[in-house]
Image (cartoon, rainbow, N blue to C red; front, side):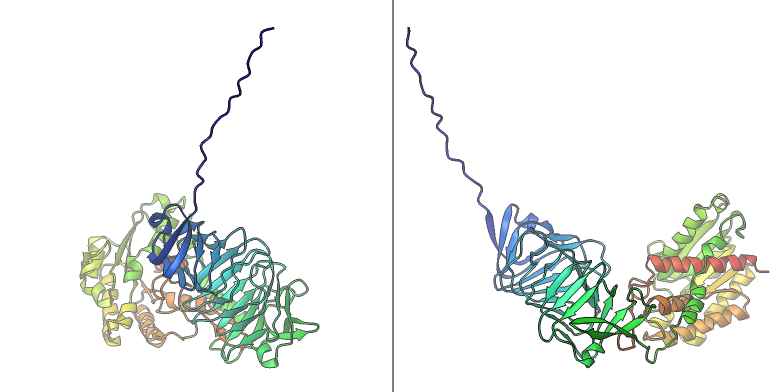
Length: 531
């Protein structure tokens, strides 16, 4: 038998080079860590460092060392950190407003070892680490620059041995979202809230538990007695309890309740709080009466089979930047276009807003700053004749009050000229009172007294010239009193200066434009139906 030799084949392999995680030493302002340092698996700070508004989703770990680290989302751009955070310095997260459109999220698979102070100074931050994995090992500060809120989404993601401090010029809070959380205690230096949404439980383990500074309050919201648990090691003293309130606890009549200590160690709702020296009534009867002022369906008054608008009617809107921006005009235009009847009658809407304009500019015209862009605008009397206007809407005055320093006499005279011109051209005129400057209810804004005086002039001119009045100011004030108030544990009211009907205290946001559209549309309907 022929022997066949067996040859062993041995493959000689070159050793494979494994990718080495790239650690980048970094400091200063980095607008986009992705773009500046592609492929980085870890960052090590060598000095104060800011990650900017284009950070986006970042999976690299960050060793803060003993330096200052700032995540600045540029007013609320989406920012998500999922890498491990370590070090002993300081970590500030600065996001957008409250509420917030884009997400700010601190996420990861395992606990972070960062042991310095973590500050959520502005906006909303969601902590989304797994249950039992701490987002950081140091104390948490909520607030400092503006309104700030921290949302928790899993059990025990804050360190048991550290405190939460609520601070800063605006209201702050933490939302438990049905989780169980243990911390050493909390210090309240402003008006703060703890939201017990879901079957939430919060336990404070230190002897001091809660400390509430002079003038500060702590509101407990969405609390369900018998389900929610607010546990403390020692009973707070009476002064501290007097600064804590439960807002509308489940199963009890709506209202604010004082805090009481219940053995063996729980803070629970006590007696209902009586408001102290309020500038306006907040009882159910008063709230219902005010609701009737603003809760009207003005857009329904100009649409449908019974619409008073005749075919080919031109409606011109004269005003300042509130009109120039066009938001409420778009709402009226949309309502007409979406209605089966009015979509076929050819109504023309013209924006005659002058950015920064006052009553005098409407009367005499303006060389620039008018819609669209910064166009020139002819005098009111010329335009209503030129455009064959059937209805003229005038909402003016905030700039006269605010910075043009128009005297009451001159303001009245200009309004009377507008009314006379409309009458001469047989144009139906709707005079509107102004919205305001600041949204604090009850006359608490700096210019409220002056604005109300000029609105009184508008009402008087409308009555004496037999024009239709749209009292936008009254509707807005009623809205603010009903919706921009929160009763605090000390019996006072908390309100916001903006972000209710305006985005800056003057110019309407989406809800503000809806209110204006409804009120002005109702005025247009009344003007058309009047003799």
